[in-house]
Image 1: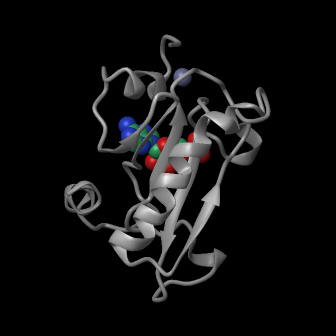
Image 2: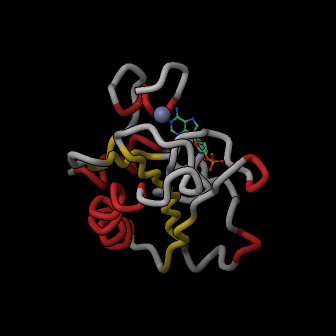
Length: 132
Ligand code: AMP
Ligand code: ZN
């Protein structure tokens, strides 16, 4: 736990999140400003600023990523997915706690040019679909 880290606070429950899945080393929750329906972040429970600071943090994420990728594909009927990690401010990383973006993609908005399009679909409905 690092003071003033948003994702540490989400991991310890002091800030609420729409949790999709978790295990002993990582937590998956819906991104609050989804690029596409079902956009999910997976974060390690321990505080690591970025994958560059500690490349072994990937191991913490692996099991939850392996669980959530097929969950998103199957439950949401996605046609593909972007799996993305930013590291360092220069890359666009805004929250300095390792996280992988799992961004389900749909045939009606294909390609990298549409990656960061905002999806206004209700987050609670998405969570219900994933956790029912
Ligand atoms: P990055 O730019 O890779 O650091 O991505 C940070 C992501 O965290 C963005 O996609 C934000 O929408 C997301 N985010 C920020 N605050 C929250 C929050 N309270 N709950 C869920 N996702 C968040
Ligand atoms: Zn943290």
